[in-house]
Image (tube, rainbow, N blue to C red):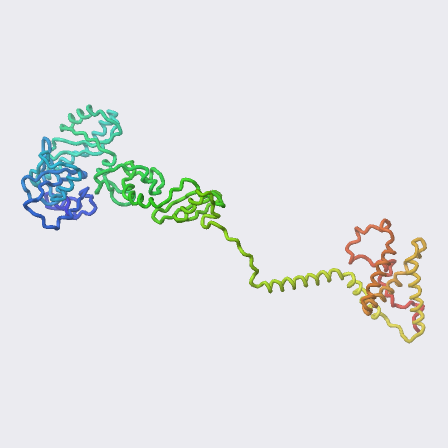
Length: 512
């Protein structure tokens, strides 16, 4: 495929355009390029189709008849016939493909088709380049005139004819514009014949060109010549967000590429069920959130949750049928929730053993707490026994010492009887602490050496003695400031005899 950049040369014989020598692949040098897929085939020369397609500025194309039987090549500059003059264009297509293009565009092969004069010379091309230099100054000046006249129109492009006798002004407007006064001013200032041609916004973007959001050149500037209507329903069918800034192209209208894959989406949507209401389940109402058309997966979510559950179209149809029958599945995935059978753990025997040992340890702790007072009495008896044994031991063989002990025991028993009698007949208890201490010491030794029945009797006597000492509850002194029980003084050792050794003999009874 060749274009004007490879066939047209300047005065010095260098290739004009992008210097790609006729291999412009992007279409920047020759917009609306057409690939001749019959160029490598041997075509008949006698019955060859005599009409060629000529391209002009910014991709505008028309058909002209090669009545002179010129040997033309794609990309050659030719001089063609136009009303009231001539113009220069470039061959874009010839042969049988031109016949197909004429049928597509519904152009009749009759006498109204203009003819090709000749192949353009170098002088024709130089003159044409000088004429094209007037286009930009004319464009700026015309916009100033339009602004002064306050016309609601947008001037986008100007094309001068090669003979410098006529200029075509391309504009776009929303409403009808009265530009009769504008034509008079332009014709008087530029000394040319003026033609005003209104184009659409899509055609305007195609003439100006540009780069789309996809990174390629605009379709309307490279290959798209017919513009179809694009509706917002095309975006809905393709599950696109209805954001005007993303769906609009450079022309300000919906992108033409929204129609490219619309038929494929319409075919895929035939298998997708229509969900017009939420799916009813025992868990709640599931609302449709998203649909993957080609994978045929639909995502549903509950109002109370942020999680989406993917379902295939078969499952969705099944739930819809259940809802029509008045039934509700348990969840979106399953219809009925199976009851879980409670089974014992794998190591149930080990758990039972652990529980058994725990109960034993708890019983031991309870027994230790309950036997604390008895242990304290036993410890106190042991201490008394140690004190008794640590003191000076009298001679056991001495009869005097034995008599002293018997007398001391009698006095102790008499003091104990006095204590247990009426409170008004009780004797002073200053000297009774030693006898009580001796008695408790003997009882502690009996507890250590005697059987369990002796311990119980000792506990009963101790409780009875405490009750006799304390008397009625209302006559007891307050014990709020006495501190813990362990730090309280011994009841039996009152009167300052707490530190006396009960086994210490009196001075009068010491053995000689």
